[in-house]
Amino acid sequence: MEALEYNFPDGTYKFITMSRSVYTIIIKNSQVFLNRKRDELRGKELRMDTENIEVLNPFRIEVGQPAILALQPLNPEAAFTTRITTPVVKISQEN
Image (cartoon, rainbow, N blue to C red; front, side, top):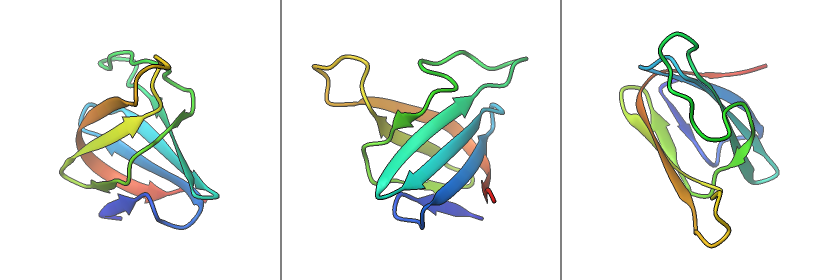
């Protein structure tokens, strides 16, 4: 796959970034969740790693470009938290 969008059919999708982080996107019933696993050797730990975080924005993730996502905020007074990844190197759909 060369791109992934928020309005794709329900399912589980993965993308890998240049920093070797593995992100899982779960689309179900018009809701989207993100789950990240970092590269244990080089990766930096980010908030809520390995937990599902709701994605709040319409997005298009493309190979060769960073993914830019608005996520459910930690602070209840905030509207969202922005996550910007290193460039995406691979996108796939899981079975």
